[in-house]
Length: 443
Ligand SMILES: Cc1ncc(COP(=O)(O)O)c(C=O)c1O
Image (cartoon, rainbow, N blue to C red; front, side):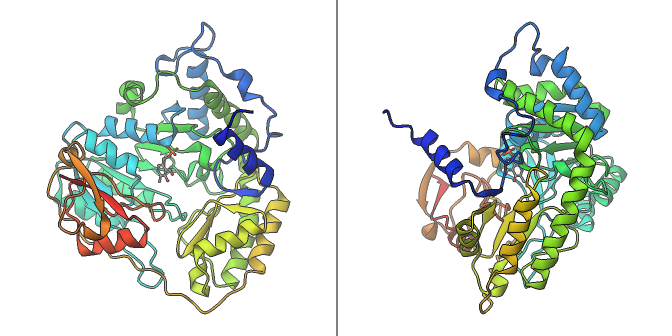
């Protein structure tokens, strides 16, 4: 038989039948809606509409989604949240324009800003000096940046972050309005926030444009994402902006999974998420008693982030403990291990996770790694640096060179360096800590 490396690896993963606390949110549950998506893999035909020129069935599906999320317009993406972020930036930021952005940012946004030749005023979130955890961006810092950068076209915030930390979108939106500047939010990790007992989706809280990575926390095929628009001025160009970056063959199964998910959400979403929230809060309570819960306040109630270094176990070792016990987390780093639960996880899945946390054995605390993120030294614009001739060199020998590509370990989801920035001793320390041994620099 011919070798099938990828297919075999996926079949192997399936055979392990670990409980999924990672993306995608459908948890490979083939019983959910029992749809054979292979059979739905069509293309643009007379009856199937066309994503970027939608007039019939895709348009109707998007309108129903928009109604559910109470946006002015919602657009499907089969190219993930990345495509929504690209479109959102193209809409809100003119070529060469200025943007105020939290440094907690996905690399797709930085790369798009580079393509758009943006001038970026970074707002660096604070770091908690005992846990090493990045705080969410502060409203007062955004306001200060708006005051000193009157030529900014928009403010860009990522909320929630990987660990579930939520920014005060309501107050940030208010400040942005007072400066007549749009607020755009990367809500990749928070599509489900709409369906919690307290709706804290950024569209509800006053953002102008929001990008949702639906496949991360909802039962949607990987790649399924949503671009929500609340500010009418962006509607006319929205599809066009997405089409610039997207494939001309968006996957119909992915789009259909968004449609099916919407139907399920409208009937079951609130009840399902309110039950899930109650169950996860019980698990968080156990984790709190074991002294490994990262945070209780200003976090997504569903996201579970355990700071295992606090009790002497490296996050990557803790992840192995969970894997050995048939539970697959979303991610782990030196200090933490993170779990994504959705209503597609059964009561048994949650009971298993809870019992593994109850039985988690601790050790002597390991000090959390405290990164140092200083105000970056900018030598070239994002655009110029990203499109310059570059070479790969060892990170250890890179002090003083100019970075040529975005270096963003996930977690923590904050770029250590973006194109055009000078590499410092601190950046090298962070690079080596996150295991980044080589780096692309300008020749
Ligand atoms: C904060 C954040 N934004 C955007 C993305 C991109 O989402 P997608 O994988 O759906 O393109 C990710 C993916 O991990 C993310 O963590």
